[in-house]
Image (cartoon, rainbow, N blue to C red; front, side, top):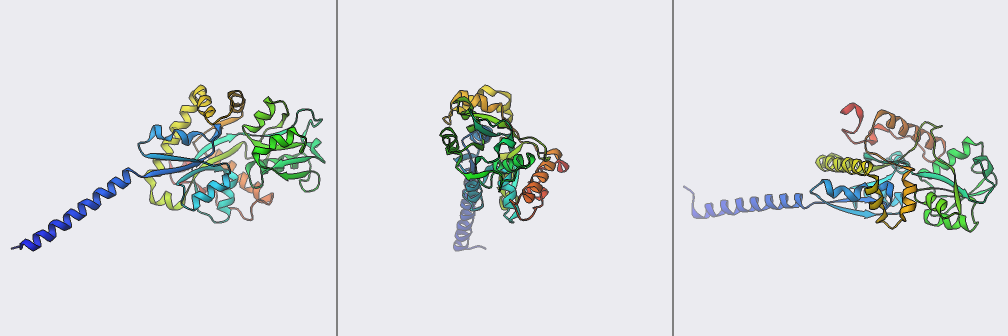
Length: 315
């Protein structure tokens, strides 16, 4: 027969376990999912995630894809949008990044002065071109020069300038061209100081792929339900914006970019989420070109960069 003391001890223990269980459930329900992205039309989907999940979403805006990747690996973010060049570079160094969804394609352009006599990429010989090292635009610039038969180290002068400052540098004649992402090419065109010389093409087999949503191997392994919930929210946000360009335009305008610029930018942006075999081949080809251009020292295993359940054969 149990004594009053034993009954009291059992009651306290059960109360403690109940309290811990309730706290765990409350913590899980109140867990904040931290997502990094840019405030641009091509990286807008995370700002709409909360419409398709009951989880609390905290969206943090960045201006540099490398900074987002660093924050992700440091545990300050659960997910982030970044360029495929950044993702492949990280994977080539053994960093545990995992692609959980597509983000956007196209988005880039090579811009020259509106009044310049530059009519082809070959005309850039002897000219000064602005770029940001280690970005998708950097690789696209190298590819464009190589296709035209120009040596990036000998035939042109490449100068590092932040994306925000490229337009002013071109308008003031400090540079002859720049390779950048939207909305800067559209701004240059509409403000009259620039014109589009070239858009990305598929001569090297990686098409117009650009960016994706990343997480880490640890989070993908430990919190698969969270990953699936974000993937679903990302899919719904992408379809919603694609199906209603007016809503997409209005939402992107809240970032402060002029609507006329955005209207032109949207013609050079493709939002997407789904990964297929064609896309995987293009990512592999992109990694091959990065290796050949000296942007990475070794090839990562491309398929291992994608979250379980995302690859076509696992459906």
